[in-house]
Amino acid sequence: MTDLKQQHAARTAGKTEIDTLIVGAGQAGVAMSEHLSKLGVPHLVLERKRIAERWRTERWDSLVANGPAWHDRFPGLEFDDLDPDAFASKERIADYFEDYARQFNAPIRTGVEVKKVERNADRPGFIVETSEGVIEARRVVAATGPFQRPLIPPIAPDDKRFTQMHSVEYRNPQQLPEGGVLVVGGGSSGVQIADELNRAGRKVYLSVGPHDRPPRSYRNRDFVWWLGVLGLWDMETVQPGKEHVTIAVSGAHGGRTIDFRELAQQGITLVGLTKSFDQGVASFQPDLAASLAAGDENYLSLLDAADAYIARNGLDLPEEPEARKTFAEPACVTHPILELDLAAAGVTTIIWATGFAVDFSWLQVDALDEQGKPRHQRGVSSEPGIYFLGLPWLSRRGSTFIWGVWHDAKHIADHIATQRKYSAYQDATQRSVEAEAPVQAATRLGAR
Ligand SMILES: Cc1cc2nc3c(=O)[nH]c(=O)nc-3n(C[C@H](O)[C@H](O)[C@H](O)COP(=O)(O)OP(=O)(O)OC[C@H]3O[C@@H](n4cnc5c(N)ncnc54)[C@H](O)[C@@H]3O)c2cc1C
Image (cartoon, rainbow, N blue to C red; front, side):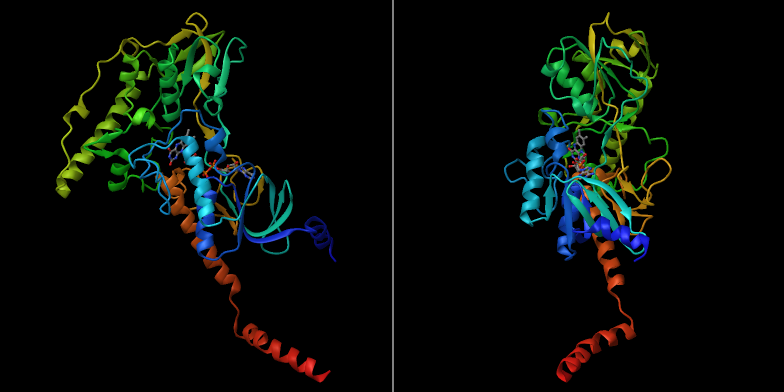
């Protein structure tokens, strides 16, 4: 045996072999398993904790889905205990994925972490090191989520006077020390956390940057419906200049349009992008009014597109002129705070609702660029046999969302099934050897 082969034999003694290994059993892993099951592809899903773990333990207690129950689901199962227009709680969503996996008997092993994936040196496929031994897989689908590593910008102060946490660690207002809170980030997480803290009687400063803010609903249709019929979920690339624009929507309290001026009227103090901290003094960019104006523009452009769609298609949907009414400009916008002495303002906590990064350090294959970002086309990576699922803009805007990932998984499953056909192909010589083999064997047996 060559050295390489000896090493390989030593590492894989007692190993499991599988055609396709899916890493992660969130919505992406469950969808992938469903499609592979339908196509008869042998596979296994490994999940380091529980099915849909992030919905259970990495989100705040009161979180509900951003989209209504009729929309934020897979095609094969409804939320039959919920009104279709209601917003499922985070626990209900996690239960949904457990039920879904049970429905088709998904081959999921929980409590097993994938530690390392390496390409075989001398043949196709991968060696997968897990917390419970080695697996040899012909293909690997990384379904470990779009939001893996909480990102806190380097400007975060090293100052023991303040409790600091990422939104992934926030659970509820009671968890925080007494006092005011600076929430950094005006996307869906930052806005909902700021609103919850304000309602709980905390003094809240909310640092807002560029954002989109669709109406929760317009003319009797939720914004998810409008994005669907207007083809906006299907956009394949981020519009230039919108790469760092977050989206502010919420299903909380029955689902309400996010209006920053309304939040200000309710007591939240808005500030611009957080620039820096110096000895307990936070500095903010003078960009709050501009960010709000761009958010309004985005909001109004969706109303205009919806009106045009209704007119063009002759739909009988009630007019809603009040959707165009605006709140008065609050003092925090007309006279923006550019510096805030946090201790003097009573702030004791800083919550960083500043997003996430991916972490594929366990994936030691040729499918990542110099920054560790996946190189792929619709999830099919540059390393044959490695696939990514659930990433932002994997194929389109909807790719990270519950319903969107299901369609991306279908594409990847089709790709895998096609590759299996290529692998199984035999030319005429191979076919004739195969056909003769049993006859020769029978002849030999008969001759004995
Ligand atoms: C606050 C918040 C609210 C959201 N609300 C909505 C919403 O309302 N509607 C919607 O459509 N989308 C929503 N999303 C977006 C998206 O649906 C979720 O982020 C969803 O959890 C992504 O599912 P996923 O399966 O791709 O990844 P994840 O849910 O992150 O699942 C990945 C799984 O992989 C496991 N894993 C990771 N590494 C390993 C390893 N090495 N070995 C084994 N297992 C591993 C993890 O434990 C995890 O269970 C929201 C996101 C956030 C952050």
